[in-house]
Amino acid sequence: MIDRYSRQISFIEIGEEGQKRLGGSSVAIIGCGGLGSIIATSLVRAGVGRVKIIDRDFLEYHNLHRQILYDEDDVGNHSPKAVAAERHLKKVNSLVKVEGIVADVNHRNIEGLVSGVDLILDASDNFETRFLINDTCLKHKIPWVYGGVVGSYGMSMNIIPGETPCLRCVYHRPPAGNMTSICERVGIIGPAPVITGSLQAVEALKILIGAEGINLDLLITDVWKGTFHRIKISPWKECPSCHGK
Ligand SMILES: [Zn+2]
Image (cartoon, rainbow, N blue to C red; front, top):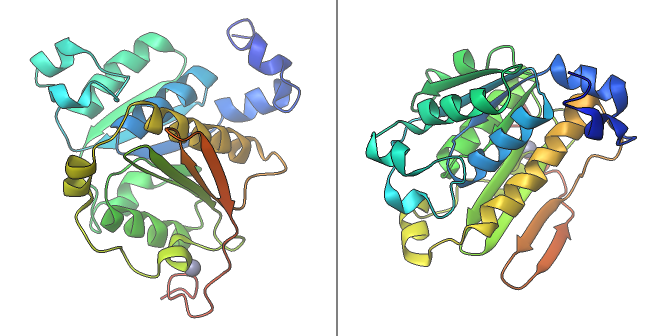
């Protein structure tokens, strides 16, 4: 086991203690498309003890250019993404307890689905789900990492209940427009979720091991232009989520 993680343990910010903490950690990844593919593979390879992957969709050919966890057989078999992800990731690292759950996350099931996890990663494709994750995490004091991608843009932000502003502090309400149809119209290129999901995965590692210096800004990257911006977010004084409503 030490040999498997030796290069990561040599990285001084993680070390043996950090590796032990990762092994004792449990995360839920909500959505397993482009972002979820890279987040799940990063965290399973890094040795996070339990990785729960929740997704409702079945694979289609137009997923394959960016959803790097899957192959043509998964599309041919009409596999649910959560099932295919579990199958592939168990072959990557048999030490990790990987659990794929085919479910549509909603207000009735989310608390049961994320019960007991140390961290939630948002790899969903719509703001209704993100606002639900936000409120659930604030209620149960679970840290989460927001992520979203469209075109060549990606955004990510860490939300630590009681310490940082929340997603509702940023957007106040879900932006208008259906993200799926926006994605169809504007398109998306494969490297955008790979870069954004990687940024989310590294913040996940930092949060799970209790590292100092987690990122407190909203990160915006445009992989086509090669630009990277940080935006400081202030708490919204009237935020209903932050005030427990
Ligand atoms: Zn808030």
